[in-house]
Image (cartoon, rainbow, N blue to C red):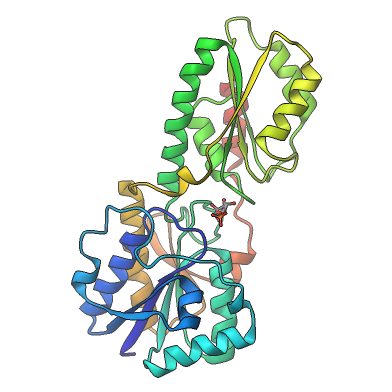
Length: 324
Ligand code: F6P
């Protein structure tokens, strides 16, 4: 293998730049030519591919976002789109890919390899932490700390005004951000897509909160089956039916996707980037380089995307136990 390319795809996450830097510099260290593909699969289809040098990735390790930009490509879901992408890679003699992204990115890479034989090793780039085969994904730690910082601030004002706050965090299918920011922020309840939300239990607990506890924080993952934080707040408010109780909603949204990556995310991203390139050199494909218990582990795309990553049961217990 002489030429490889790296791209970021799907929702961006803090630490993607540190990962790109590690891929480029590890590739150069091993004597490879490294190319950067802009805007994920979209740029692969359009041929937006540039040769990267060591200096192309200078001064980015601390920056959020991704210098290669990112996109969610509909065209890559079609055979014609993937064929165009292959033709651009073939013209540049690119023989291997490092894909930084999540489930959609890896699903696309797997089909692409089956059809056109270009091997891909993935790096887990998503704030949601919902990939099997790595303890943490790149960007998760930063997103949790961003959410936590917001929850701390909301708690100040919630306490001053004796209010009940519903704080919506990201997590379309997974409650990792909600659980960790909820535990760290001392939330009274955390509602996640993985478990059934019991509205009656929330209502009765809110009614029975000890007298000294006049404010509460309820963290809601955006994918909760009862709906958004706004919708759940309305249901709870209706059932409590007490005009003296004041309910508010804050949706944190994309603020969780930006910002300087934490040290944990930079190190994770650098390790995964190096492991992905070395995996390609060793002849690996269709797998994600992750870190489990401190060690690099390669997990097939099939498992990293297909196998559910469960929330730790003691996390859920902690929320109930600490909120009395
Ligand atoms: O996939 C990561 C994620 O942050 C989800 O939690 C969220 O639902 C989604 O991205 C939002 O994506 P977009 O920026 O494309 O709306």
